[in-house]
Length: 450
Image (cartoon, rainbow, N blue to C red):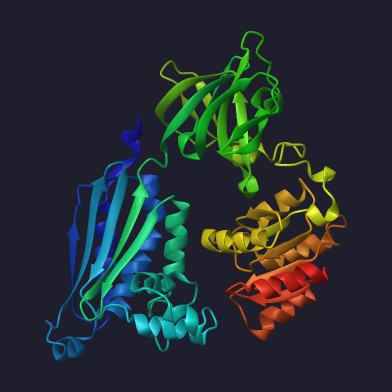
């Protein structure tokens, strides 16, 4: 059933080959394709195409030198661009390589300091591998006059975002004067997924295996289970979905998942049926509007099995369990809502705030933040500006527009240091405007003042 969506990557190669000479302009470039017969899930390939085109644009316009420069460096006047695809376990690996000038790490570090994204001390302490990661910061380029396609850094944040969205990994290797290789590793099972089948109230349901932290059990009716030394609330799926409670099972079968805001929740079923690989199909209207449903699959007997979204399940009710009941907290113990689409920023800033004694709940964009704001009270909001679905500006507008949220202090934490961004944020009601990298003193000053 899953093979119906598989297509050879050669189809993408053919489309790309027609564009390369136009993109290369006066440069002489030989394009080499490897792994044409590798089969790719069409959904994966559609999602990956934009990222691969960004990488090819970048290699052609900035990586590969002009014929004159190549000859001066002792190279052949014609550059080489290589795309290689191969399967590795359950993943697709695609490499985009050029034999151009490579990435100038010192120029990259210098630009990061000039743009205020890093301090001189910070870049001086970076290893070559860490310095190379700077290329994925939005807007950071080593080109003197970057255009839509010119300059290492232009489009690299787009590539990184696309790979993250596809649950993949992105790495880069470079040797100055010799060339650069970008390597994308993407799970092939974005549609053909491994599912944990379970039974709730006599109905078969499924959870994506990738969302599971561990499987546990507990006596029926127990409210919490201990995991890694801490209590985790139990959320019975029967009550949440309006299904009948089991009258025969004395134990919960618990699937521990990470929900919204990084909260751990134990989803309680009657029993686990087992793991199964299946094609997950998107739902049609009006079911697409239900946040707790990810899709559906068919059992070998033709039975429709709904696939649940763990994070969506917690949005079904404002009384979903949290690490502690929010309404029982004193105001100074309310958490900070940290909103940023960068996982690394969320981790670093959350750790900084927790170290200072503040509980933290995180959101990956403004839309998720709004949903969390409707579920529990918060002490303050710290938000990025540029995010998918709902930007920081839009989140700020919504917070100030809603009477029950308008009192919340909001700090903007962003790489955008221009007066126009600052003025707009303050005009929309921001209480503080902070620039990245996050500064503990500035964050503490904001929280103490509000």
